[in-house]
Image (cartoon, rainbow, N blue to C red; front, side, top):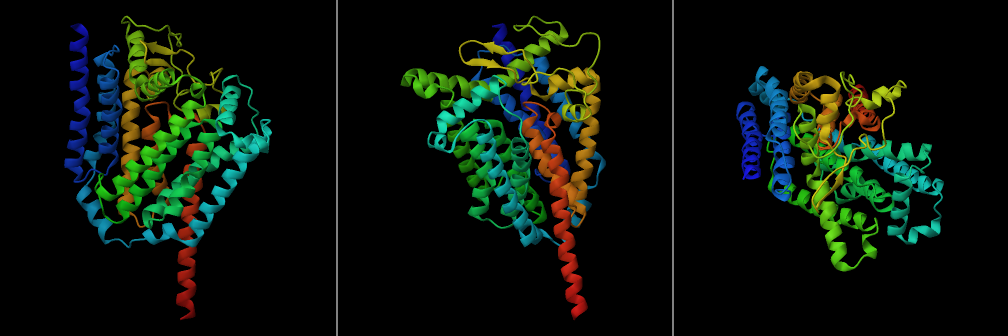
Length: 444
């Protein structure tokens, strides 16, 4: 009975995420805004585990903390005049055609080529041969074993492949949003699917999907289309999601499930799908119980009597300067599991690291700072003509929201660096256009 009461309490708190999303959309005047998007996302990634893993224990206080964090993140929207922003967005010169300019398309195709070549040579540097490419599942299985046994060689090709993967989908989403081309859609996800099938790297594909959607949403803003849900676009996104899920299932099979009897294979797939879709909530809830002194299932060994001062949230920056301590490959080496279908996960959401870095109150204050930064950037995206940095930052924001249920997007350097790289490409495209325009006017 106690478990049912806790579940009902958790569900009611979760519904408040959707209420907050509606309030933000009501104040701004439309749903396509950072506050409504992040509130809606966290409603989805909490309500799904509540129903799929209804038998697993969850502390409503853990969900309440996330709710408070999200609400505080959205507070800065009430400081801005959104009617003026919408007006400026409608009357300013629409530079959406720059997204499909020859310069940006050429940069996009060049990055696709560099990315695929880098992935190919990375596989060769790991000891695979061209003849091995006949069996995709075998290569993926062997690569996964090398990854978890820490036997992978860190080469310039592996770093270049990961780095170029993000600008590819960021630019691809912008180009596709400006002018729907199936070839752009295909090339945008070609590197991600290559990594999925040959390296069993599922995370890259999902991040790529959200970054791609972020690019499409930017072009919607340029058209003054502020709808977050659009029939025709969402059909394509649903189809893309269906393809992604099927591809992930194939990736799971590369972990040896394909060699099991059908019944055991299906059972294994259910375990993996349940864990990857729902494990984060129950793992964070259990750690939250440990942190506040409640009974918990797992054993944890966090830093006692102190904070990590941003190490988990800004890990890539710490490592860049040679700091960061001895962090395990998967960030946390404690694996949470419960029952038959929550199958060992070390995904504790972005909030575990943030609380370790700044404490409970510090994390909430940090959310206010983040919310203000992204709100200012979004406001300038609407008001300014072609703000290269703010365009890219919004695309990054959509990808970072997805990663927040796993870890901080600043845990690795490749994604934040991509912000500046793509911003530079957009900035150059704008300057090339104005240079050609001036030359044309001078000739006249």
